[in-house]
Every structure is written in structure tokens, then in C-alpha cells.
Image (cartoon, rainbow, N blue to C red; front, side, top):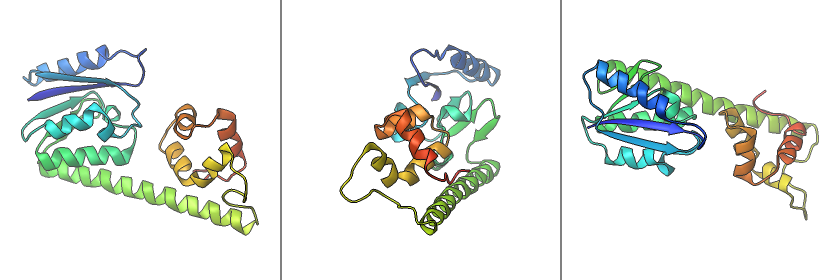
Length: 201
């Protein structure tokens, strides 16, 4: 089965352009789109929490999945790697039109997938290393890490989960989406970032 996957981030965006591009791509290769899967969801949402996750579970060996560009799958390199891994393991052919990638069971695809995995691992290690260095520096300067005893504010939430905050921002999550994720205001997040040394700098 040949499936076209369309994703937009908001209701105001329309998937028509993506659909037309996929149709042109399929026609040029003698393929016929048998099913369309469309969803309105942020690229930061894990694939397991999206229609895409259910789609990958149902797809079988020999099926083809087409997207206009790799960012339609996710904005997170780690998530993209997980998705590509599932496709390779199940024998699903994945096409990303803009980048010209085709992931199947060929040697070239496996090498490319390995390269993506290496980059994702380096990205995770750098974020972790920078976070630890920033925390160590603040501790050496005598600054208090974590929340003070007897207090609990919105800022405390960010302090206790600061590695997650920096990781999200480092992966391209917007200020608005980050605030919504932690249930804080923009001002609270900005004050938190201003008073801390970001590991991403």
C-alpha cells in the first residue's frame, strides 16, 4: 500500500500543498496513493501520541510511506531516528521528497540511517554535557540550585525540570509551546532563562 502522510501544526494551515507535491512525486514514479493520513499536530508531539504512530503499527513489509519533507515526521532528530528505525525494521519504504531520501532495506539506506543515529547521539550528549557544565558553574559560584525549602512557585517547576526545559528549547520548541508544556507564563520562562546560564549558549 502507498500512503501519503500530511501534517500541519495549526488549523489555519492547509495540507493541500503537501498533498499536491506528494501526488506529483508518486505519479512521476508510477505510484498511486491508496491512502491519505492527515493530522493537525505539532511536530514536537511524539509519534506514538499521533496518528503517525498508529499508522506505523498497521503498515506492513513492502508498504510505502511518502512525506514532503523529513520535518513532517517530527521536529526532533531523535524521534525521526525512531521512525526511520521502525520503517527499516518492518520493511517499509520511506520517501522524503524535499531531501530526496529513500529509506528501504538497501545498504545505502542503512548507512544513511546510521549517520542520522550518530548525529542524534551526539546531539543528546552535547545537551547533557552543557547542562551539567552550566549547573556545575552555578554551584561553584555559590548559587542555589533547585527550589528553596518551604517555597514552591511556577519558577520552581522550571528549576526542578531545567534539563527538560533546555532540551526542549535546544530541539527548537517555541517559547509558547514550552510555556504550555510546563503550565507557566512567558514572563516566568523568560525570568527563569535570564537568571540561568543556558547550556545551549
